[in-house]
Image 1 (tube, rainbow, N blue to C red):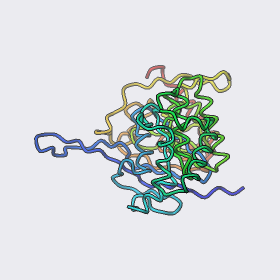
Image 2: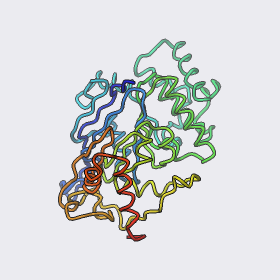
Image 3: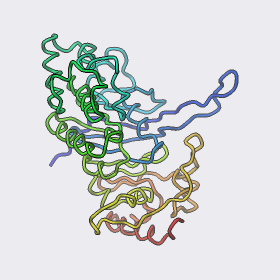
Image 4: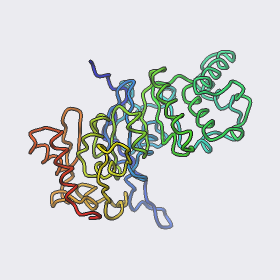
Amino acid sequence: MTTPSPLVVVDGLQTLFPIRKGLLRRQVGAVRAVDGVSFAIGRGRTLGLVGESGCGKTTVGRSLLRLVEPTSGRVTFDGRDVLAAGGADLRGLRRRMQVVFQDPYGSLNPRMKVRAILEEGLVIHRLGTPAERLERMTRALARTGMPAAALDRYPHEFSGGQRQRIAIARAIVIEPDFLVLDEPISALDVSIQAQVVNLLVELREQLGLTYLFISHDLSVVEYVSDDVAVMYLGRIVETAPSARLYAEPLHPYTLALFSAVPSVDPRRRRRRIVLAGDVPSPARPPAGCRFHPRCPLAEAVCRQIDPPATRLDGHTVHCHVAARELERAGGDATAAAAGMARLMAAVPAGA
């Protein structure tokens, strides 16, 4: 079986927000929201991006689409440099790269009917005649489970779940290749979250879409994603195929995250790991490994040297301790993961 070629490649992406003070608004520092992020997403695949609130997940998604201008790095979409594109080139790329935002109440213009909301993208990209646009809009609504009659209604006439379906229809009506899904279900009632998740999975299969699925819901990410990247304080600390990462996490932060996921399967239950302290400020990230102030396994080298990437069969981890466990296990990821789990289990509760 051949691996799909990457549609999206991100290399060393950095997005900083300046901190200004004083009467002259001089820059005195920067918030390092995204600081050297790299990953690739294969065609037709879904990369789940997980982490605590404030770790930079949303900024990554917005930077890919240049809704926020990155400070440095490289983003390639289907072989084309996104950050170097401008004018008509950027408009053409954005037709193929769309986004579904977290808040269905804030992402739809309350003064526009659904017809105008969906048609806007078609007009901007000059797609089809008026009759063809109507057909596209009706088809997009039908694919998201909404009736054609919705075209003549305003967003406030719909529930949150229906609004998010309209937002998804707006994203797919121009037939893109890639969607950034920024917490697409977190603002919805629990009773309809599963419906929207299943809809997104169906659309990916039917339309051949590629997803960047940003979420803090680890159970949902496991369900929808082919690969998962774990982010902490502006950086990705671990990446692996979904099944492998959930079965054999290597980074201490990933182990702590996954220990909080409830499970009815006793074989998948993990001892709860409660991390000490708070997440450091992204304006003043710690030296060395950024996780070391909260890591129960931190050593002297973790406080001084930023851990390089350790790669093994599609599994990448940035951790000195995990790298040593992998070396000790002779490159056996299963044995190394078991070793990391034992080390974390030996840490006193709350340490």
